[in-house]
Picture (cartoon, rainbow, N blue to C red):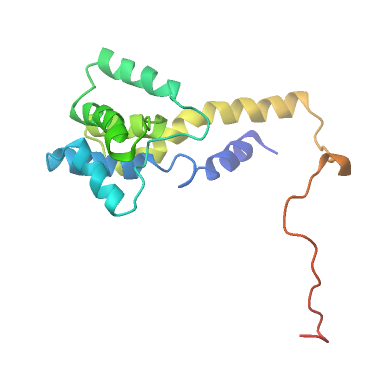
Length: 174
């Protein structure tokens, strides 16, 4: 497979469930700062509406290490503004409103920084893509240069986890 096709395949995997929280998080932060909401008020509204706060929480990291790096860089380059500060206030307010601390993840940090840069939240996924593309290139190149072109999976290496076998209708018993 050509390198560009492999990278394109990786990019197409980016969607609402992977890299998709940047835009909705940024929109929420923009509205909250514009309307001068408090973090507690915003969280209460989301809780009452049974909505999640995009850009917060992570399946792997209790505290996403990328957030500190991004916010340190934003501070160093004088890009840390009202939206980044509000996002940090949201982290603290989660304990009060939800009963446990829910830390910001990388999508939330990118969303806050985009807002402080006065950029359109619709560009959120583009920043996720730019960050992921070098990894896709490296992965594809490694497979192209270090792996066999075709790898057949051995049956014992495959574990089916779907529903159990069931009879399928035939044209005679529909």
